[in-house]
Image 1: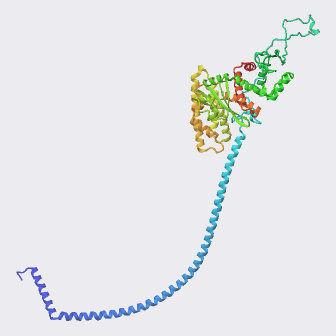
Image 2: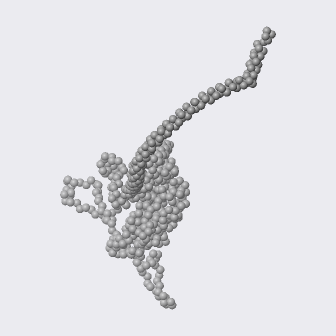
Image 3: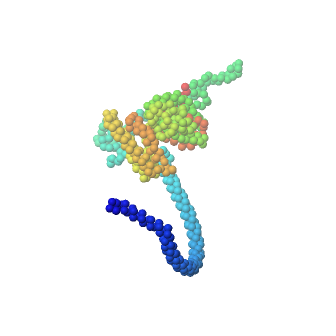
Amino acid sequence: MGGQTWNEANFLFWIKHYKDKVAAFESGEIYTRMQKEHQKELAYLERIIRGLKQELAKSRAENGRIVRCWMQVAEDVRAECEKEKALMQKEMEKMRAQMQEAIRQRDEAKKVAQEKREESYQARLQAEELREKNDALTARIRKDHTNSSKPSSMDPNHKTIHNSRKPSGKNVGGQPGHEHHPRKRLPADETHEVEMPEKYRDSFRYHPTGKTIWKQMVFLRVSTHVVEYTTPELEDRFTRKKTHAPFPAGYTDDVNYDTSVKAFAFLLNQSCNVSIDRVRTFLRDVSEGKIRISNGMICNLAKQFSRNTEAERNELFLKHLGSEVLHADFTFARKKGKQTVAMITATEDSVLYQARPKKGDEGVKGTPVELYNGTLVSDHESAIIKHGKRRQECMSHIQRYVIASIENEKKMKWNRRLRRWISMAIKHWGTFREEDADAWHKMSGRLIEQLVEIVQLGMTEYEYDPPTMYFKDGFNLCKRMKESPDDYILFLRDPTVPPTNNLAERCARKYKRKAHQVMSFRGDHGDEHFCNALSILETLKLKKLNLYHEVSSRFAPS
């Protein structure tokens, strides 16, 4: 082994070892030994298995007993549970019934509450509607000449119209230094000298100053002067017809009345609004029974005057059509029990009344307004505002609407500011002087800016507090002023344009007085003849002419 390595020696050892094991197996020695060891292990295992089987049997028996005990316990528990479950089921049924009853009561209560809410809501709606209706009726009751177009004469118990002048503190009447304006002395038809009392004849005490003291008494006497023409009646020998020489113009009937009588009766009826019967009675009494004019003749005077003045009215029509500023308005009366309308157009020195069947576009047709192309001053009448090149809303009407808004919309602030603004603007318009035109226009610009602010304030207030369905006049006015501001400020830009339509409004009152006197025009053309007559009469008054003489001349035969 001295020459072998360690690995070779180790390898040879293992080879010898395995050869010995193979030899042992081949001889059966190991197999016998292994069998014995196996028998010992089997015996040992059998003992262990028997012990385990005995323990298993005991365990099964114990488990059976335990199972039976647990089954008994489980049965008892199940029975107890069933009993408890039955009790719980019964309790649950009871609670379910109570719950169903509670649900039913709740649903009924909810239904009753809903009905009550609906009733309360309807009651609130009705209360609000009644309040609005009450406000509307109150506003209607409060309508008078201060907050609407209604004239003061239409108010049965209208309040006193106070003088806008501020008290000066001076005594009533002429002031010291005021020039005396005596009654005009008239030429005397009779002159008498007052008899001197005896005490004034004492020349030692009294002596003449050279001045004569005079007193006059003016008498009015109505006398009739009758002019009669006569001519012999002739008979034609050949035709047997009777004839006579022609009478002068105007002598058509047996008894004719001069233009003086016609003018007198016409003015009493048409201008003074005296009824036909009273005109006839007055003429009879004042003439001591000599003039007994018929009702038919008095009625026919308006028709005759209308026919004789047609050319003058045509001139008025053309004059209004070419005027720079024209006032226009509608007013109403009754004819044969139905409503009729009069269109009034006016300038500073002339008035034209035209009877129309109804207002609106049909009422404008045939009037100067239809073809007018200048500056038109009127209220907010939809048929009128369509015409004219420029428009100015009547600020008096606007002021009335504002007063109505103040009375019915007490929470608003814009309407009070607008009322003060209107007064300032109208007062400012009246202060225009040619020499101060620049300062006037600057102030006008500031007023226009203020109006824009007021209208914007109004729209903001109505956005948070909308108008009621029964009173929308204030909102409609504010809306119109926002949409068409130029229609409300033209008089601030052009001082020749008046801020109000009072010129036509005052003319409308003349028509209204006659309408109230006659109650209703009975003829087919009664209102038309009255309008034609009133156009001439009012124009003559504006020109300050002698009304009686002018009317008398128009009754003269052509």
